[in-house]
Image 1: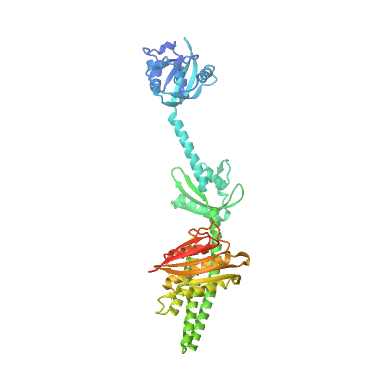
Image 2: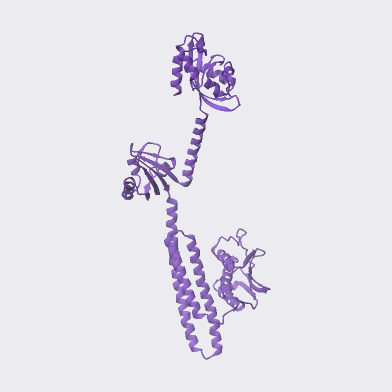
Length: 512
């Protein structure tokens, strides 16, 4: 457009007999075009760049009146160096260049970017540069903003592993973003719709065709997952695509998401979940067999020794010990299943874990009702913990090399609190026996329990190698200490840890 205006102006101008025909009193077509044009026009002296004539549009563009701007040098409007201005004038004069993108300045100091078209014209008064100016500041700003937006879009697609595409059924050509090309493994060549449709696996092709048909014919939502062999490396990728149809333009716009890594992670998680479920069920069956054998044995012993008070007391102690041990084991299974259910995202796995947990909880309640007596309102933790320490330590091969000292006061506590404390102490003793004395070296472990006003303080300590400095008891990395932290919070207690000549865990339990 700028060149058409320039050529028309040159033709009209060269028809004039003289440069001075552009006097404001003239009535020529050339003058009328020059004076009334909304396009800024100037006539420059080639050697100096002096502005010999300027129309109102040019004067307004730079913020001067015509009398002021006529007589100024073009270099006074430019932000370029004098040498650069001179080189541009020479290039236009010699015909080596007629279009320039230049930085100019208005009278108020505001910079503007202009596209200048300047051509040499011979007149009766000598050669002049006929110059048309276009303010392209806004155009260049929008162009930069568009380029920046496209870069941001490409970066966002790369981060999110997504892309977008357009099927143009008028030309049968596919337009794809950089993200879509990366996902499909396409190069920058032109791709037809048919060629792109050959990339998905053949067994998914019928579903894709049907999804596209119902989108275009019936307006049904296009939402499909399928697999492809990526064009540039033949990798199997899992793709999720959404699209909508533009009936007016006969085009389909869609997005694709490569969710291969998520899919593979879900598959691995499903396998681990199934293994965990099988192991949990087998463990649960073993627990149930032990429970029923103990129930049978205790009932037989109860019938055989019903007439003897001493035997009855012995039975009560045995049943209480067995009751708490089984209850702890079953509660541990419940907590493990709860934690695992919270770490998976597949609905089937979550439901299976929650079902298994609920079954264990139900059996635990049934067993508890069989053996709980109305007079078991409080439990003395001394005998309970001493038995627990003996039971736990004997399960480890190195227990004979480790001296275990207990100092537990006669303290009666709510069975619910004691139940949690049993699991806590069990975890802490197990942790020390497993990790504090590597290589079957000897050592000492202490378990103490004291009551101070409305607080019970339980300490489990050892003089072993000490827990690593990287372990934070309030944000533990392992399952065991994580379980300890959870149970501590559940009973409203606090736990702390010291590393002085070994490791010590201190539990503080408030009591009413």
